[in-house]
Length: 326
Image (cartoon, rainbow, N blue to C red; front, side):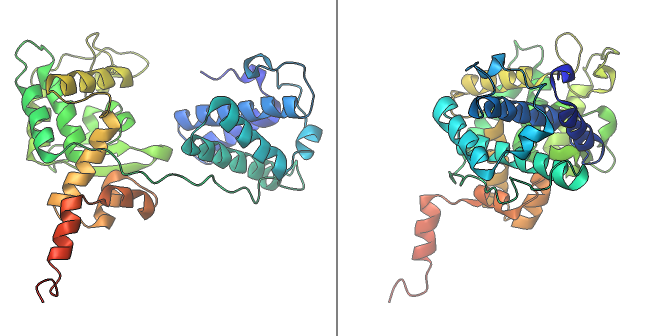
């Protein structure tokens, strides 16, 4: 929950603009607020406007527009260096913060005309490490589904099996799964709509395995409570009959991975998304553009990390060269 009373007025205006005009999700607004307040706290230290050294103790309410006018690109670089040296922030984290700062200063210069010069105009994103995503093999995935389906002592077995099935077959995000309402599913068309990053809606088509898992769960699903999260509409419910939380889903995945003899520390919920994408690409010969649409990626370059190949495929590619036997 954001405490807007601690923010300068221009920051709250930026958050309102992001929510209403840019249509950013509540999670994005929360991240924006965290990133900008963190940055402004650093600016007070950097400009010797406070004797405090701990970010948590610094008040930013008194940072006015005149202070913002003094900020340069070098000051922003100093902040990103501070995040690296003090908090050991990864490149992806710094890239997110840089993106937020760019959007913030663009708003102040172009929308509110509070600044004449945008110090973040030429701010570049930190170069990201392109690491191959970890994923389960086809055999591991089958084993995980088999173990989850046959847990006789688990009273939530059908729910948990449906969750694992959707992750492995559809490649959806954790936030998308917990947000599914029953009304989002078109049973006659075997498809559902989900709300992805940036509050963007997309359609996910459901295969036979997904449809059966959902229908089996709905046959025994309890009635949800009428609360602030609209639990009575939710597809997946917790033990308390409220909308299932992200943490509960993470716990379910960790538990089932361990039961299947797989390392839950190396394979998280997001790794199941990697797995779905990788299996579809390797075994289903799915076009990368179709995969991009399925996963809800804005950029094709993001999708390309799922199209990695293993050493055996590389070897087979070389062996299949028509010049190999000459």
